[in-house]
Length: 254
Ligand code: FES
Image (tube, rainbow, N blue to C red; front, side):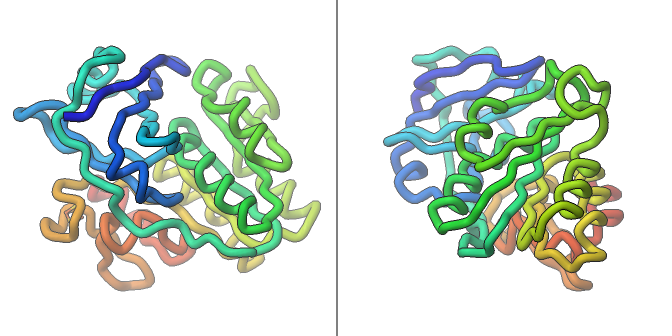
């Protein structure tokens, strides 16, 4: 059993939860995820590890279905039955130079741990976070702390730049040399935003979130086509070369 240390709402229907899971916390690296099951009858839900502090890991989720709504109803002191992880391959962390991390909606949850790792590796890190409106923006303060520079966009202009994160990425690339980009958000946002970096041939990573069941490469439910080959997001990813991913196939499967 895994104790919930702390939980609170950070945006409309979006929650952050710290869970005591020493075996995950001690081994977690940027880009990896965990799979939890609330109780014996619960479904298995994959979530990216958003931060680590001592023996606890932070997950961030939107309460949209039965399980995430149930999870959102739990309080500090309650327990989760299973937490498996860390799963998946870590992000490719090395000295690239200037890196831009682009987060869309709840996808921003994945970015702080990657930003910290990239900065520790000597990179300059620019964050771009976007959401439909100001009420759905998350982790603005934290991203401001872990990035050298932070830009914010909302689709409706209620905060920051009026437009899409992809527009800000386009402006940034036009202004200065960029060596690597991470884009994490809804699948359609990743597909569209990846086209911004394709013409310049900038190394671009996306973190895919297909349906997962076992998370260990056994069931095949998370298969995606990358560079014409079938890959399993849970063991070969979740991060892949954005310019090689068959996003249309992924969206059909989802
Ligand atoms: Fe089953 Fe990836 S979740 S193979």
